[in-house]
Length: 178
Ligand code: FES
Image 1 (cartoon, rainbow, N blue to C red):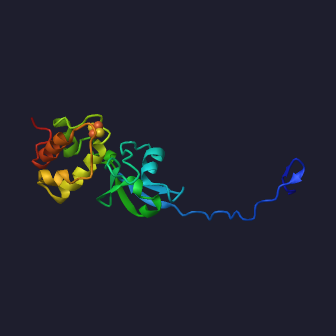
Image 2: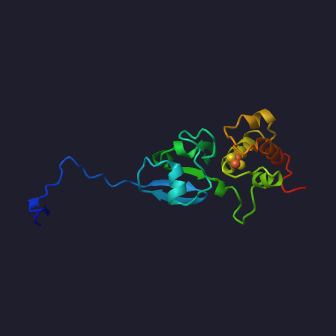
Image 3: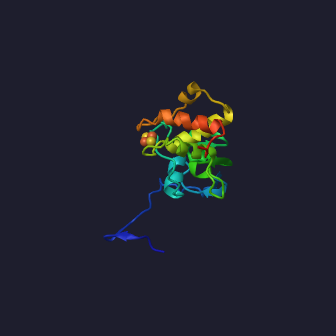
């Protein structure tokens, strides 16, 4: 085939451009579903969740995830989703806030406790608190105030006191009770 022409001048392909090798997919399980990511391996998990999967519960928590709003569980450990490129997730299991409730829609006890204690203001920080709280309750089934205060999460609506109460309610097995 003759080379393409622009205004009568043949267009010569730039020989410095090396075609990218076909990428192998990155296999990742998210909330119990298997996904294969074949796009940019450096894409942060946060954008994959929010922009590609439309799982928008996980929020932007700062460039290094410093306010905790983008926490997700990776192989059971809380990690800021903005800090994780997809390349590091091959073979991993991710749980987001959308994956905390049971398949029949029954809320996780900590989710229910947040409702019971009215621990939600605007809600921006809530998914991160829930992920951090689920991990805390797994590590320390009866956490102290100090344990809760050490979580990396912040709340601009001033819900920290009610968040504490919610985590303690869940720890006491009283979620959903009067
Ligand atoms: S509820 Fe609004 S930032 Fe926490």
